[in-house]
Length: 81
Image (tube, rainbow, N blue to C red; front, side, top):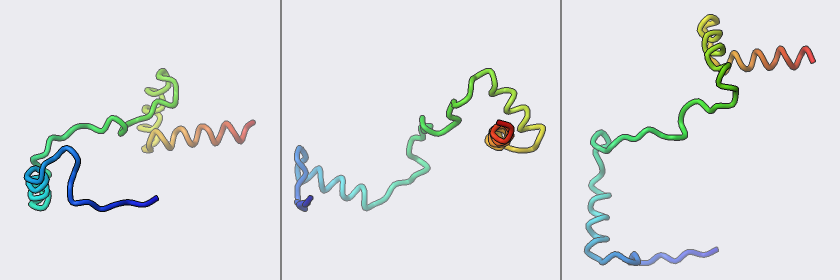
């Protein structure tokens, strides 16, 4: 696979490209950019919904994370099989 470096962008004129380059080179104030939640960040629902509260409660009691509770439960189950 080969790539060609060009001095133009299809659909944009030279003035528009220059303005975009100037904007990018000036940098962005990240604090002013709009913030949107990442739809992929959060708990993945891999267990039945009716067990979530019980897992969370057990995690609070143990001072651990829900991941730890699941790992311990699965480990104990697999050892008993």
